[in-house]
Length: 116
Image 1 (tube, rainbow, N blue to C red):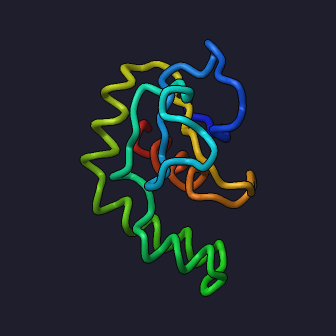
Image 2 (image 1 turned 135 degrees about the vertical axis):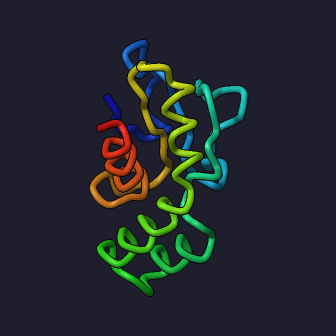
């Protein structure tokens, strides 16, 4: 099972394998204060794509389409993450304020398709 959670939410034992999926460290959190198992920068959107989305140059649908293309090129990294989680629940941690339109949701769907 893969789920998404903001880094600012309290860690839980139900989170399983906790993976930070932002390219940049989240604001306001000390590295010693965040409970995570892995920081998967390589699976985060490229800086160019992230800036285009946050700068309102592209909408979420276009962002998702472009990000999926990036993820397909990183399929080996994604499979390695699934293997490291070793059948535990994976919680993708992200810093974005928008919980309905963010890269972690796109990544979660991509990983679910790889599990099938």
